[in-house]
Length: 363
Image 1 (cartoon, helix red, strand yellow):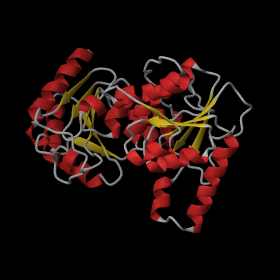
Image 2 (image 1 turned 45 degrees about the vertical axis):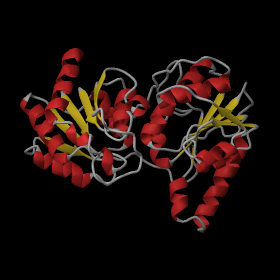
Image 3 (image 1 turned 30 degrees about the vertical axis):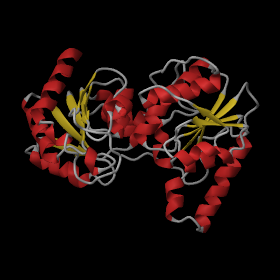
Image 4 (image 1 turned 90 degrees about the vertical axis):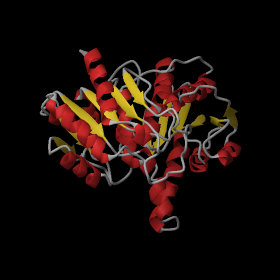
């Protein structure tokens, strides 16, 4: 099932030049899924504390369905999260930096951001690329962390915030506090509801466990044969097993299905469908990857399988969860292809024990 996509100017931006409200704020967090979900609680807090502010978000096109924008049908105390979405195809630009298409699209984004007349830009990505895009907006204040992911980005900020929180969600809140002059709490964000995806997901047989085996690089990936063993055991316990298949992960999902004795089902899902399916899952099992953070943001029970990334900084934040990580695993973002050594010490039995404890607690 695919959502319709517009190929012209962003339809979300119905009010790119808003009547001046108390303050207009641009958020730059282009991707990826987990990083956007980590930024959302801070922006939801801003929306709740200052509902009259105009909030815009610059984001890569593949992730915009994570945001509820101005015409979002779902309403709540901090919905819609943003008033405007600015689609920024930065990764596509990098593949063809001097093409006519790229140059035209860059001009479109710059013009769009200028027309919106933002007072403040918050860079929650901490990269040179995101800081440059923030500069395009022409806001009088460009705010980022004092120690951004790419150190050179800090010299593009007009204001730098020294953060002390351990988790990236806490750090984003500290940056939001600097903008608002408040002491804001992290707020569990509401995520969009797509009517077609929700209707489709209603047809899934329940209960089911959702497995998401992919990750940004190989060192974070738990072996497929272990996921297969977990899936087989859950099938014996009466649960249906769904395997989420992200871009480029079809072979991994098929291998897990085969190793489970064909008791699992691989599913290629849009963002809207993944949100709908995750809402209905009894439990989610994954490594440090976007679907795990989505499950946490939806307040679902989560078993996290961690290796080279630190769950204290990047792990589940909301709801009930259990994180498995070897004590000798060290934080390493070198993007090695082979699974990290500590990750390989985590057994299917350990994952099953953690999962069953969470399921028992949820009853």
